[in-house]
Length: 257
Image (cartoon, rainbow, N blue to C red; front, top):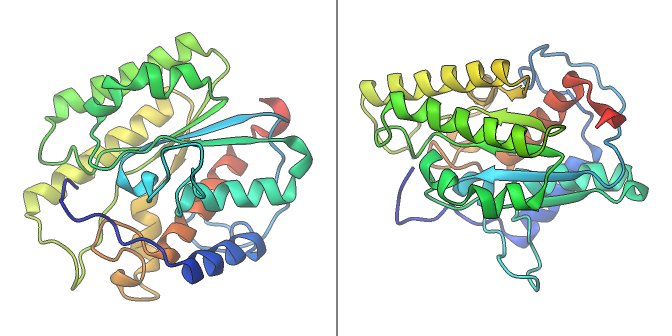
């Protein structure tokens, strides 16, 4: 959500632990990561050589990424980095290009304002979007879906072969979480439904983040996954990364990109 407090950065040790886990954890080992909820590991399917994968969104995606060429972490230290690490470690010869343009506090309207520069001009083969938490309580529902839909339509027109990954906005109540009203929670649930509807319309892979974290909270307290109910911990970013990979696996795009 919009806040003057930035997400807690990963420590270097925490980052390395998370990265190591991403390279060794079997794909699909987490219940509820994708639509099947399968616990059987499967080989990672290759993406086409030289594919460009772009992550768009708000602070959850940004995750302290550097914004200049000299940055040590141009992908940030969250789920985008973990996804990139997994694919590039398994398929180093494919020369995959991963890009992160998440910006904290962004709403869908903020995405629209920078879409040409930060999306279309980058010409992604796979476009991943996580947006909606900052819109909840600020962007009317009847403007959220049309704006989001238009971005996807514009992208498809400019890049006919692009593939989409849409990630639901999410929230977990916890002892550390900001308190929101029942109306806010209901509105967030509606944005999750709209995201799923757009995924179906645009034949996108869908990452059901709310289900993912709800199930995870049955195994450990909510703050183990989302430190303030919204921003992921190291473990929460790992859940998102695994779920993203599984959703792309289930889409069966593979090297057909």
